[in-house]
Image (cartoon, rainbow, N blue to C red; front, side, top):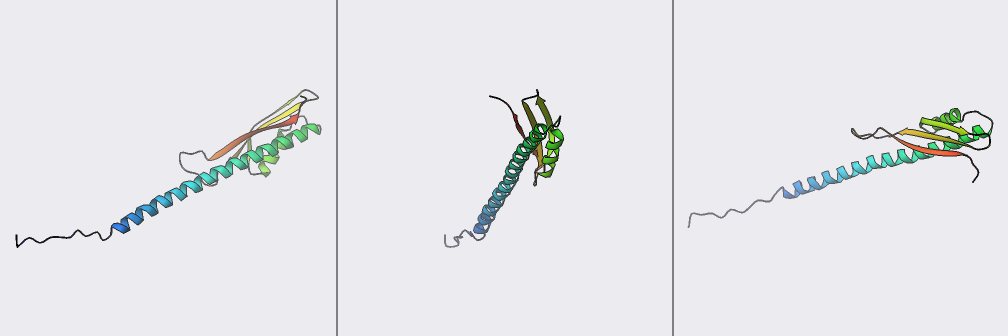
Length: 127
């Protein structure tokens, strides 16, 4: 076997492929984190807008308005949301204003909802 030549395996470029794969996984993980963060921020904004809208609607009813939904809608809009549902229940002494507010998500992904909603209630009740 004097004519046989041993060939060495050439591993050049294997590190580049590994680094490229790791970088791709890191970029995908960061993208998922950013999208998830956008949904968390929208959910918190929706909850805050719903709470404020319900309290403002209850304040309007307590001040003599027959329906607190107009005040609730104005407050929700001022806080970046829109009222999807609103109801006022009153019996002369006790009252409750219930609202559902939606807020658009800043960074949307196809297949996921473009807005997030939250509900809140406020009013005067006796225990």
